[in-house]
Length: 242
Image (cartoon, rainbow, N blue to C red):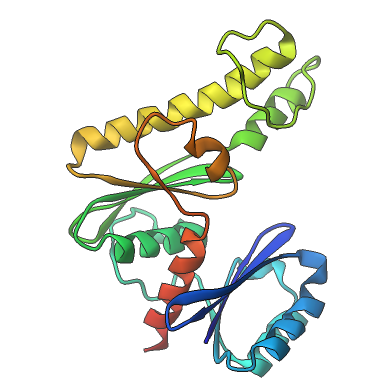
C-alpha cells in the first residue's frame, strides 16, 4: 500500500492506494496532522511507502513518524519523472504541477492533455501526445480575485464565492461576482480554445478545489477529477521506487 500526502498551508490531503486503486481519502487540518497520521498507520499497517508533497509545512517530528512506519519519498525538483520536461526553468516548477503532469502522462499516454488546476491559483499544464511537458500558465484563482479587489481598493467588500445570475451586475456586489465568476470562466474557456486550435484531439482535465463549481459553468467539454493530483503523486511514488 502507498500513502500519498499533499500538504498545503492549512489543509493536508491524504490518500491510500492499493495496487493503484484509491481506497482511502481524508482531509486533515494541518494542526491535527501529528495525531491523525499515527491513526492512519494504525488503521492501515500494510502501508509500506509514503510520498510527501509540499514538505515545508510538516514538522521534523511528523516526517520522523512517517519514516518510522514506511519508506519516505519527498517530491522535489530532483525526483525522477516519466515525461520529457521541456520547461525552461525545471527547478522552479512546483511539485503540484509535476504531480498533475505525471497524472496526465499516464491518464492519456497517446494523446495531448491540458490539465487545469483551479485552486488558490489556476494553473494550466500541457503534455503532448509524445509525452513532452511544454509548460502552461498561472493566473489568480477565485478567492484570490475576491481578495485582490478588497485589499487593493478602499471601498470594495470582501465577498464569498457566489454564482452570478447575470453577467450584468446591478449592484457593487453583483458586479464583483460577475467579474470574478464570469471572468474566470471566460478565461478558462478562452485558454482551452487556444490550446484546441493548436493540438488535435485535446483532452482537458479540470481539477482542484474549485473544479466542481466551475465544471458546469464552462462551455468546453472537460473531465472533472478532484483526485487527479493525488493520483499523480501515487504514480510518482511508484516511478521513484525503482
